[in-house]
Amino acid sequence: MEIIGNSTPRFEYGLRLGADWHGVDASVFFQGVGSRQIWGEGFLTTPGYHASDGAMPQAIAGNFWKPDKTDAFYPAPYNMAGSNTGNNMQVQSKYLLDMSYLRVKNITVGYTLPSTLLNKIMLQKVRIYASLENFFTFDNLGGLPIDPEVISGYSMFNETNYNLGRTGVGTPVFKSGSLGLQINF
Image (cartoon, rainbow, N blue to C red; front, side):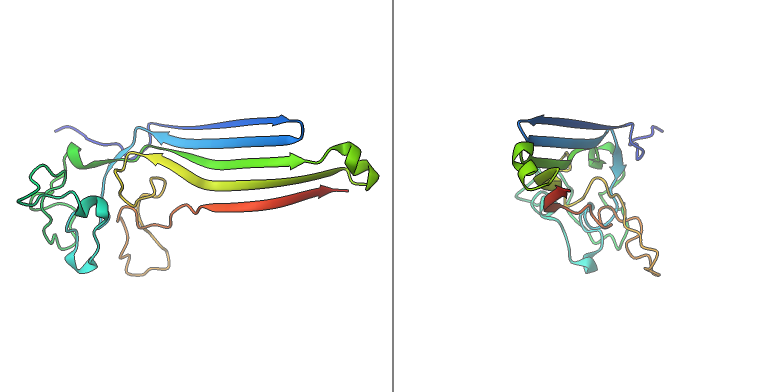
């Protein structure tokens, strides 16, 4: 027996780059995980996981075996009645999800007004800026609608634990943008 996959990241990394020039400043923060593979569980990763869910991501729906598509990646979906393995979907390295990723966590661009202008209106600093959070993620999930940073669904308020262990159904990392004005007196 050989162990396949590793749900714990083998390494995590981050990098921040920043520069400023003549009042213009910019910074970018990258964060990611390398070498992490998991066996996906739930309707977002398993063809035919539970027919009553009525959901199948386009990445699977367009790439499972049919008589006219014998070179498809996924096997023909069967109603697996909420099971992650069965019929022709058995645990094997082919269907492990590569959960490694690189995410651009933050991009900020700003402009600080020259101090010669500010002295006349008795201000120390005025800076305008724009910022994007979590806008870009690069992964190897082949179009599956899964946030690689959020693996399985769980809620302490959900007494049935319907989503417990289902890959990709947790709350994703939100994207946001902001504009700001910083004034120092």
